[in-house]
Length: 124
Image 1: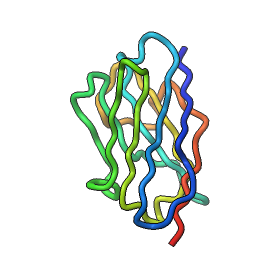
Image 2: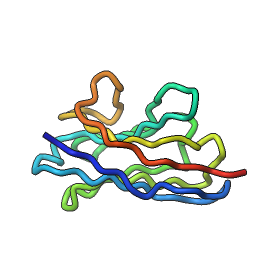
Image 3: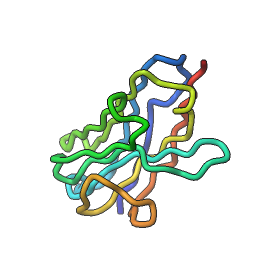
Image 4: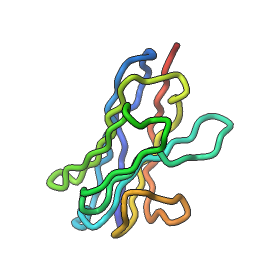
């Protein structure tokens, strides 16, 4: 069993930055690929970024490439999402996700564990 707890969301102006953190419980964190998904009001949840279990590869949806960076610290059982140059269209609830022994691209239907989500709001 893995429990995920997100933090770091909030309200920021367009062009600003936020760093989301996801702390995982359990001793097998390093065996899980980790990722971030988001769901905006009235829209389906979508993949944002992922990092493989080894940390050797990362994936991003096209709309955040060059602005967001995913990283992980296995010693702290934590995955991060650094979000720069934020846009109003980045406004959403951001969810941390874990998939056992996976590559960096994560599919919703295959996720093993989800966090509760953290709200990110970007004002224009």
